[in-house]
Image (cartoon, rainbow, N blue to C red; front, top):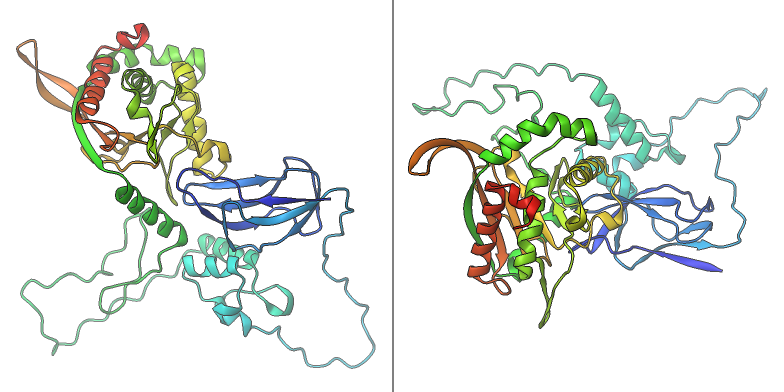
Length: 430
């Protein structure tokens, strides 16, 4: 009996993925729930578990683009696993005269069309020349492991210093305010270094992941009537409370006390009063939620991912902080589970960690609301008819105006402000 292995739902607005790694080889035995492959989406990398025990038979190759619901393998239950292909054993030395050795063919490695999809993707995304990579595959074919090993060697070996730029010929006309040469200064440490052409430009193919991110963002703006409203919050009392108890909190709960747990708790209470901000449109129907599955936007080298904290309304401050830390680490390491990427009902994104003072966040479909946090700045404000210096944060709520009215969106932010400016309300839920 055979069981199909299909690409499962991978999160809101995610319709396809790339099979970047077959963890189990064709013909290899697998146990129930054991990972058989790794899928890459514009959200994160996820392992796909086996639905039953048996022997894996692949229908897709590494590097293939696969769609939700598509069959990528089957598992033969009760079948006997075949032996993994092994490298041929060395033959005994023959007494016949040695013939001139012929280097393994490298022509295939020089042509992108002869590379496997996984290898081609690595070559294009890292702008490599296949001819410069040592190939170890059958018939001199370049393998994914060859490319990865080449990249590791490149990281370990510092690049030779660039040759000095030649002086421009005297006859070439110059302006009184000539632009400095783009390559005259090395890029600061930690920043991407680009090698520009003589005209001062460089073209880099857009990666598949970045293409999908762009498509999803554009689709969000085209399918919802997005509007943003703003307010500002005095975080004086939150910061005092955090400063007073953060050491004790970490000692008792084993996790630091950040700002996100305060905002998450305030969001939960405000959503309870304005449930349409926590709902979404499905055709001609409004889908309400009795729970809050809170998406927390996490920035990674691959782009923005939004893992989901499920049932935040039932979580304590320490549980919220622990879950945020766990999900952020798993996101950056590409180890999120499928269920941790889908089902969100509302999202928080914090551009303040990068210094953003104000922004208009884009909805995460099909959700109807997203809260943007920003940098905390000390500013003069009027408190009880006196000017005081307070830690202030601008907050932004983007919402789907087809479902959420202006009154609701503004009232939601005002309620959020009340909770955070007097955090005792968070405990008393008033």
